[in-house]
Image 1 (tube, rainbow, N blue to C red):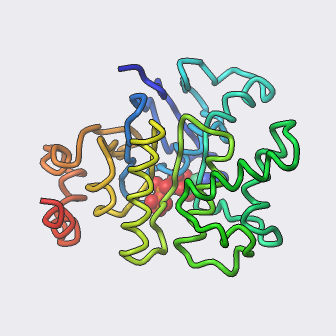
Image 2 (image 1 turned 180 degrees about the vertical axis):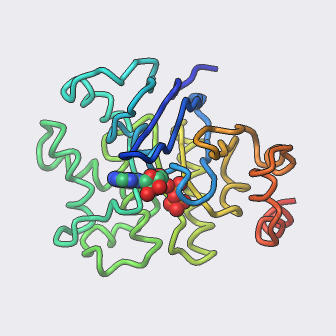
Length: 254
Ligand SMILES: Nc1ncnc2c1ncn2[C@@H]1O[C@H](COP(=O)(O)OP(=O)(O)OP(=O)(O)O)[C@@H](O)[C@H]1O
């Protein structure tokens, strides 16, 4: 199976603080990969590097089998357009309706007519599981779960092949989180989208992911399915899985 993402020898530094050092990771085309690890291990930073929003200090990030580290901003643009992102801080524009929010990437990156853009945006809204009447609502009129769906709809606007999600279930109740899990699974199975999600939500990781990359000691310590990872020999990974919440999440899946 081909690798949609291949990260080789990546290093990330902030002033004197080294977050990643010689980190390697491959994401297979068509899989759902989770990224987990302790707080501050650089999961969100890694996701923004995959999204080409931040350049590594060293190493290479191959996306769609293309090296990106030394590309100009202009050359990065067409690659960025193949990637949908839903970041925690990636809020919708509060003064636009949901539909207008979904239209934004289409207006920025295509020369389609206004009517066609609105039709496409409606399709994405439905694809993300929102009812038609949500289109004309303002973001502050939506529930947390609907807001997430609207953000997913916007991330899907340009028909990406890869969808990156940072803490998708953060702030949702268990019902909303479960519904978002179902959406991620259906985007993967029906659209063949590759998904990479950073999450602390163990229920979601068990339910949704094919494999999970565990970050620690500035590197990816192990990549495996949740069952294998939960039985890892590595002390850091063992600690992560040995608390009562982790046990409860595992028990709910078995
Ligand atoms: N713009 C920045 N400037 C300086 N340091 C930064 C910046 N962005 C991130 N960092 C640092 O990089 C490290 C990794 O941050 P990151 O947000 O990727 O962690 P994380 O694993 O996603 O954490 P969490 O699980 O708590 O969200 C942290 O120590 C953070 O303080």
